[in-house]
Image (tube, rainbow, N blue to C red; front, top):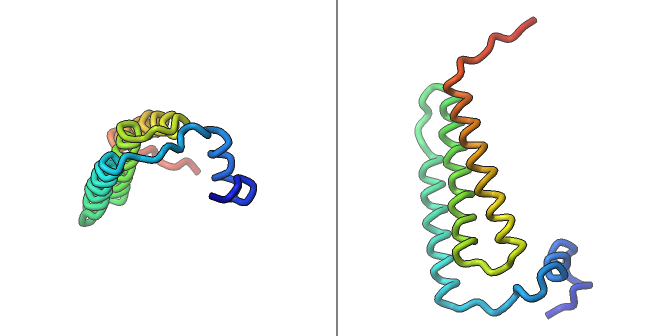
Length: 118
């Protein structure tokens, strides 16, 4: 392995911040995580590729909700299988923020749009 000095800065910072979290993964755990991630990605992509409803706002919410839910699902997989504490905290933050954004988008559709003032 190259020294942290020759690694890209972002990788070097992760190595320095969490040197004990880089244990060799168990092959069966890695395979289970990969399978779960592939399933989450497939569900997200299928949910994002829907025919147009004719309502730009509704289509945006439908696609973005699927995109955000995919991020939530992948973050949950990280929490289930991952070991790096820095990444686990990031996954927890992703879950909270993406759920909040889904709620805001859905609420925006239930509120009639305001007329622009000129």
